[in-house]
Length: 176
Image 1 (cartoon, rainbow, N blue to C red):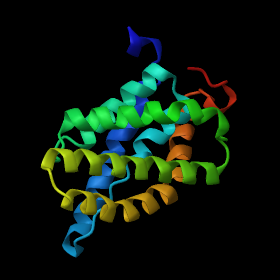
Image 2: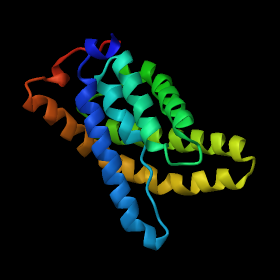
Image 3: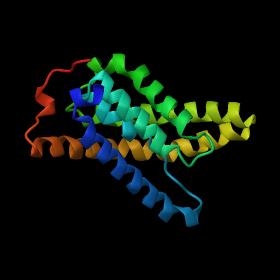
Image 4: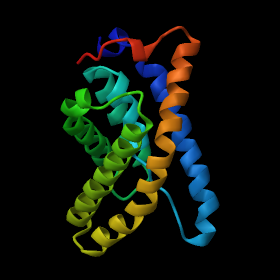
């Protein structure tokens, strides 16, 4: 069984659930001002750095299903979208340094922007209109900036959670 072979997926899924709740609370607070933040890159950055292919793919797919369950795209397309973004960026992870906050910032911004671009494409195809493109890219800027600023802290929080339980992920080699 894939999930039993890498139990590191469980704390990452719990952290992603907490991130989803936190982003929902932030968006609820920003709603009276007509603003919102969608930072999908934060769901993907830790699995890209520290999980194997199977566990990262499960995490990305479930995060996409959770994040897009209430959107017009639906959970199925959200799952596919974040899993595809994860698989696209996976071969490049050997070049990123885990201990460099700047690398985390840039990667989170790229992941979030890729998510917004894919969301815009899927929305334009599904809703058959150009306003979906404009809406997706209008929301891309604050979400991308927020993801870039929050990524180093988010990854460090999850890494320290694993350290608390005696697992030093930074010392382990990256494996697929």
